[in-house]
Amino acid sequence: MLLLVGSAGCTGETGGPVDGTPGAAGLRDPYFPKLGNGGYDVRHYALTLDYDPASGRLEATAEITSRATQDLSAFNLDLSGLTVGRATVDGAPAAVNRAGGELTLRPREEIGKGKIFRTTVTYSGVPRKITDADGAGEGWLRTKDGALALGEPVGSMAWFPGNHHPSDKATYDITLTVPAGLRAVSNGTLRSERTAGGRTTAVWHSAEPMASYLATVAIGRYETRTATTPSGVAVHTAVDPSVAADSSALLDRIPEILEWQQENFGPYPFTSTGAIVEAAGDVGYALETQTRPVFPQDSFDASTLVHELAHQWYGNSVSPATWRDMWLNESFATYAEWLYAEDFENVPAQRSFETAFAEQANWAFPPAEPPSAENLFDPPVYQRGAMVLHKIRQTVGDDTFYEILAGWPAKHRHGNASTEDFTAYVEDVAGEDLSELWDVWLYGDGKPESPR
Image (cartoon, rainbow, N blue to C red; front, side, top):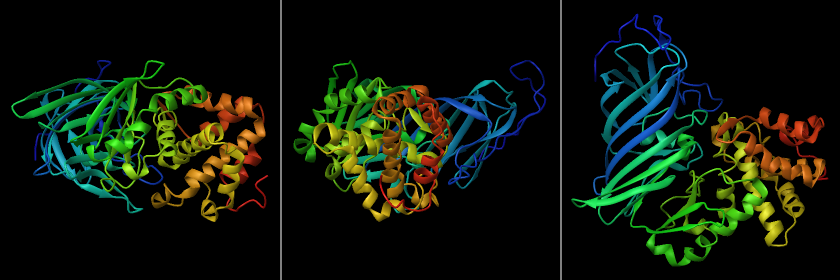
């Protein structure tokens, strides 16, 4: 533990004296009150990771560029497990204290409001799997030939320190070093890949802001391919060799599916896309990790691919303001499945709506008000959320509805938005008060007597 004490009375960006206070140790999210940190806004993460699959050990450095949103005497980072070796702020050693998942840094000089500052943390250890309230595994998941890092909702803190609330998005550079013969895959664009001394280093760059729960690292003996969509989006896929043959045909359809989605949802918000397909058993669910969603082979089908790619607009580009707004992610992605079935499988969205309406599990709670963190991924968030969108479509008509589909992610491109933002936006575009719709379908406790 470092024991340097911060000094008082230094100057801030405006040249005046700084009388800083510690940033908050949490952002009071409705479901994860200690997640995230106050007092600063992260602009960029530069993560350098060296992983040994045999031992499971990670040696890493995180360089975090941030802007102070208050005068800071100290600030927190979220980090679960792992051992911190050293921390600096703008090159000067900082005092470090650890309490559970909270890492508190006290810089040598206090940081003035508005100042851009760089925090560097070296850390190491065996990153761990985190088991969520609903029993799902996230964090750092070891596989038979490597590892897979997944972060929804809190797993990203298992492998790098940061401000791990979706409201604080940043750009990323992720440098991964692994044993030669393995591939190291992450988000964004592959800048370089080289092998020397029996180790392979890959450098990935994400130019567009990303919530930390959408960052991923996949290490294994992948078969990788690259392509380009007709509109010029780079496609990078990585597949476990044991499932490559079964996955090939659907992977080839990514450009076609993305073009169809752009017709409905507007321009694709990122510079690259793709997929990571794992062997069944490596992970128990698909996840919309930014630009490169992850799929277990037994869930890699057209409908799930449509769902996770739709998240690139809904959830990744426009991200939830808090985890209570999770239904905004999942309702649009689920409705994208309904639209795909309507356009390509001769299944009208009305039929999908009526099927969802009949399922009692979809009425356990209002989609905008899950009772607890354990319920964030329950059926009402997905299916009843999609029903809300269908009722909007019925109420405002197709022309206005499709304007909303593309306009909503355009309005909040690379930002965050809440349920209140969404309802206000829909009413503004529709030009009418939809309070009754929200009261019944979005917030209502009971099931309406009729789907009509």
